[in-house]
Every structure is written in C-alpha cells, then in structure tokens.
Amino acid sequence: MRLDSLSSVEFKTAMKKKPIVFLPIGGTEAHGYHLPLCTDSVQPEYVADLVSDRVGGLVAPPLRYAFHSSTKNMPGTIGLSFETTVLVTRDIMESLIANGVDKLVVISGHAGSSHMNALRQACAEIAERHDVKLMLLTDYDLAKQFPIDQKGDGHGGKLETSRMMDIAPELVKKAKKAGRYVSQGYMIVRDPERSMPDGFVGDAPRATAELGRELNSYIIDRLTDEVRSSFEVKK
Image (cartoon, rainbow, N blue to C red):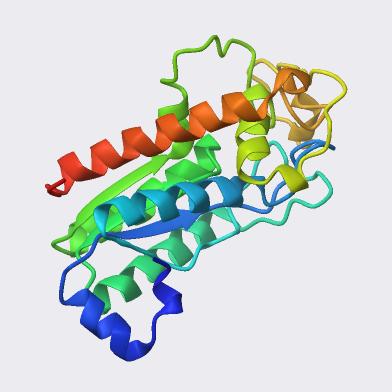
C-alpha cells in the first residue's frame, strides 16, 4: 500500500502496527532510444509495491532523481549532485522516523556506484543516529544472481529491457541493435558518456517479456525472503 494514499488519521492507525516502510529511489535517466527516462524508477516501485503487500508494509512516495555519472550529459538525464543525494535521502528517512517508522528498506533502481555510495552514506548516518532496522540494496543486486548468462549485459541491455517489457510494455520500443561499452581505462574524462556511445550496453534486441517476468518474479521472491528474514516477519 502506498503511504501517501492514506489520510493522516489512517496513517497514524497504520503505524501502530510498526510496518516495514519501503523507500523506492529511481532516477530520470537516458536508457538509449528504446527505453523511457523513468526506467530506473518504474522497476523498484513495482518491486516495492508487491513485496510490501506480501509483508504487510507501506511504500513511501518514491524519489525519481539520482546522482548520475556516465549518463549525466545525455538528453533527458536530470540528476542531483552527490551531496544533495545524500541530504535528500537522509532527510526523507529522518522524516519517516519522526513519524514512527523503525523498519526501512531503501531500494534503488539506479545502481550506479557513485549513486549507491551516496545512499550508503545517508543510510550510515541514519543508522548511527537512530535505533532502526535499515536495509539498502538495488533490485539489480538480486537480478545478478538470476541463473542466466549475463556477460556483456548492462545499462538498458537485455535484462533491463526484458524487465520493462514485463512491467510497462507500452513504454518500450524495439531495440534494433546491441549496445556497446567502450572502456576508458584508468582515465577520468570530462565526457563520460563516450563509454556508452549507444546510450545502453547489451543485447537489448534479444529481450523478451517472458524473461522479464521470470526476472521480476525472482527479484520479488528473493527480496521477500530477505525482508522476512532480516526483519523477522512471520509468513
């Protein structure tokens, strides 16, 4: 259930049960010509809604902005600075805790390493300040464990396109070629998008809704198990 669909009175009542609250963090980011800018937002929100229903939790209003590096100069990418990502994520969690939340799952659909470092910093500060149970992950931490050859797949590739074909097929266009990655070695460059000249990486033309359905089911099942175990939720 979405937290912001409740009235203030309903929310106060719901909090008496000390529910697990999920905070989906996405992004507004270029994913080639075949996927929408909301790709990194749609996926974690979908997962959070379904897992929350299974464990009797609530889903906080999503954050659809993130810190971007390799795609920051691509058309449509709208990002936050590293510092702002830390602060806004921390502030949201602080406000949730002030409202009585003591169990939080932060799930990010954007898995960029720098972005995740910002989220980890925010979560670490919260864990130091408050007596809360707090989990942080990306849905792709779980997707990487799916038993399929993932070599060469990446941002906007076969796996991500397949997942979107299952969740929001009306937003997906046909990919006509595989996307490539161009290594810059150890160099730090001012135009990092040159590493991803196609705007995506992987064999997106081979994506299928069937694979996406399997992936999404796997992620939802795995996260449900992780949440139940870590937060001691009875089945």
